[in-house]
Amino acid sequence: MAVVRLRGPLEKLAGGPEHRVDGATVNEVLQGLEREHAALEGWILDERGTIRQHINVFVSAEPATAETPVGADERIEILPAISGG
Amino acid sequence: MTELLVGTRKGLFVLEGEPGSTFPITARHFVGEPVDYAMREPRSGRVFAAVSSPFYGPRIWYTDDLPGEWHPATGVALPRGGDQALKRIWVIAAADDGRTLWAGGDPGVLFESRDGGATWELNRALWEHPTRPRWRRDSGGLSVHSIAPWPGQPERLALGISAAGIWLTDDGGTTWRHGNDGIVADYLPEDTRATAIDLCVHHVERAPNRPERLFMQFHGGVYRSDDAGATWTDIAAGLPSDFGFPVVVDPADPDSAYVIPVTADDRVVPDGRMLVWETRDAGATWTPHGDGLPQDAYVQVLRQAFATTGEGAGLELYFGASTGEIFGSADAGETWFTAASRLPPIASVRAAA
Image (cartoon, rainbow over all chains, first blue to last red; front, side, top):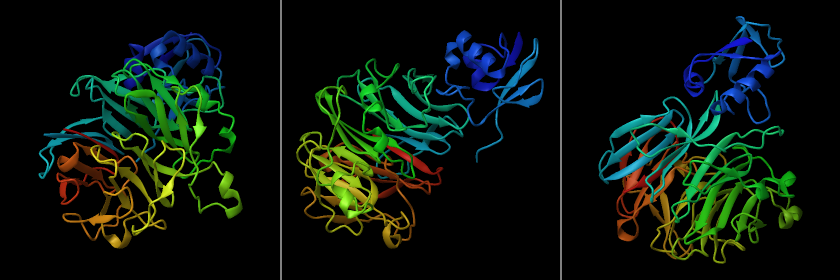
């Protein structure tokens, strides 16, 4: 199981900063995270199932996409992007 | 004491003050996030905010205790697994039954709540309307931005959509029909105008004590309907420009409307003269009001940034500018004062006394 680390409003919605979630890819893990924490629905993945444009996902500290493979016990961090103004 | 809920690019500002004086900021919420619209439901007192988080997407939040905790409403989303995502909520409107609310947004969507705004549901009939492929995005998106409820009859609604024209329902949104007769879109070729549905409505307001009457600011044209939105008459003669965004009405006078014309080319007030134009004869004549307003201001007023509270001689008017000022009138537009300055760019203003 991967360990998903959340911050800010995501941490509050999920009831804590760390969550162990099954999944072979980032997308599978994020979908599993939503299933376990319904309050997160729509916050990371939009209605199309796409990671929101200004959210960055890192797998073991490396930038990742929805298709990035996730190994057992890998750490997934979900962070707001450097953007805005 | 009048309360102003001000949606800005950098959060929701709550201002409270006495008409004629500066309104202090009493609270900030959603700091740093774009708040496209905020309103207080008058019967329950519940406050709603449409927040477009650049990170986590658009959402409606509500609170029953304004200094207290906000809750995300549920159901404000498009069908999962589709090919589109909700981009923004533009407007929230309440029926007068204390339960029913509507929210309009981009991409051309209407949500309904029957429980006072905690849970919402997509209006499928509009979402799946067979004409939808002919709707056109404008520079602001494809937006349900105007919702005009019919007092006492929550099953009757008029919507304004950019750019898909006026939509009407008499059965609570089960079926929808166009209300575009008489609207002339001079941005389209002449031989396509008669059948066009990609009509860029900028805002629609209903006269509440004569609900078959509506006023519309169009993308080039100011119109009035006396038959509940079925047909429209151009009433822009006498205005310095037929272009603009907001329109408001005096709830006590169905012949009244106020607009803030801007020039079509640069979308700011003509010649830097900020004037609010009033009609009291249903658009036959217009009177400018600028006493107290800057006459060297090249600013824009967005469609949701003009609000009223009260009526008749006690009608209060407030509008917010792209430059962060809020101007108010406590005498139905005769004279104006500066209620606030140097706020972030203002998207919406709603007033409650």
